[in-house]
Length: 205
Image 1: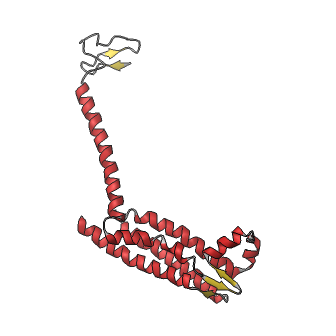
Image 2 (image 1 turned 45 degrees about the vertical axis):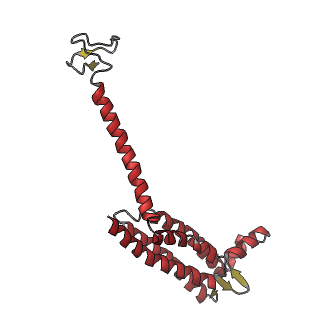
Image 3 (image 1 turned 180 degrees about the horizontal axis):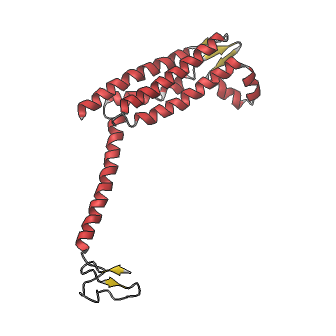
């Protein structure tokens, strides 16, 4: 059971005429201008929401040369890890060495677990990749209310994880390599750029 939008007359579900049996109002097209206007306003709100989201991404990532430098730096740990990250005994831990080992079919996960310093070095590289990805995603929302705090948290987690594993490897007889130092330097520069980017974002508000 429905009602006529004009007079409120109850209309049976089995009523098939287009006009109200009491006031003769057109049931299909009644107040169509208002409904079309409401639909248009709803569509505009959705477009505005998408545009606002895109504006946040742009302001967070490519709004200035500093933004772009920071964005590029997020990917440079991959290049840094191609250099020796750690030296454990007679093994060098680097992304290139790991890939070559896998390609040659010499990768043995069980054997790697038995060599704790080497395993921790490989784990450090894996965390660099995963946590850097998380930091990239977080940085895309730097222009939001808690953007700076979120960026600093992810940066701190990255830095602490890398330093913690590096110290552990060294205490177990391993040595840090130039790749580790380069990655650490990149993290520190990114931390500084978070504050610079945040200052530029606030200046544009």
